[in-house]
Image (cartoon, rainbow, N blue to C red; front, side, top):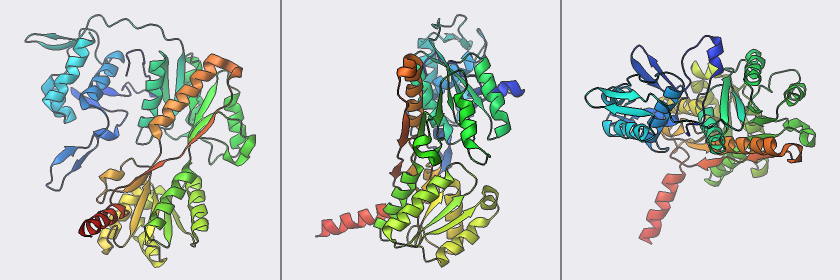
Length: 422
């Protein structure tokens, strides 16, 4: 991340002094207030822990986190930073990786090393030009789905020398207006919003209120799809109907005559996934089998019951929304003696934790990073061109990441072996 981008979390108004990205609590470094998927660790078959970071260079990620902490005031100018050994122990990274992160900060004149004393925050930070614009971003939270979206926004704004102000509302609609007011009062020139549009009496009225704000607004993962051409919101969304359709078509192409759908209810994404699934079932000629359960039921043992219903329906494959639910279904299948993918093929939806499942999950993967980039680019065009800029309404079709749970890899391997024999 470029030095010119400063992130501030609205949670500071609610009494929290913990920076969004990095904090120093009781002498311990805690990285990843914005949880990175790459920071998740998993056990190998031998029981050892291995780092699953597959995105970017680890030393660069650590350097970025330390830079953010310094800019946020976690360590003041002249303050001593944790030792390389402490950071390695706290983050699980190697000493070599930590040392490279420090080298990067030293080269940028953000950190100075003192022989025999340690590493310290430089007394004078490199001068930053005043940003041309400031953009406010409102997210439901900064867990799982949204870190990659935010990274895309942040990188694009940084490239345009635009500062970013962040607010979250923790999926509490009553906090939305307060968070938006915080962003407006901070002087932002435009907003990228992920507001609540489901489960409220009048979504169109809510959107009209947002569009009436005195700054341009781009919605992210939200739109008024029911209005068709009457929807005049500027937005960037995932094509969740298309993602679900492609998942079902993939399973059907593997020989599964009937594919079920298991979902987590009460989410903005679920209706589109159900619609895509039902369209695929109609086009492919099988009777749909859909089971819906709220999150708390999934977390309290519903997977066994849902699995039994799925198997009784004659389905030999299923699309499961989302990754946690699919992982719970895998556990229920193992306990019931149902083999994945031999007896039941699975595709999960979201691709946040899919690769960490007992049987790595084939998953529908929304283009989160690109979505964030495009939302920021559209807002920048709106800020520069004003009313001359046409309304952008963008839908990005997710891609399917094939792993082990659908059986496609095993099938392809077998075909390769047979071809070699021939």
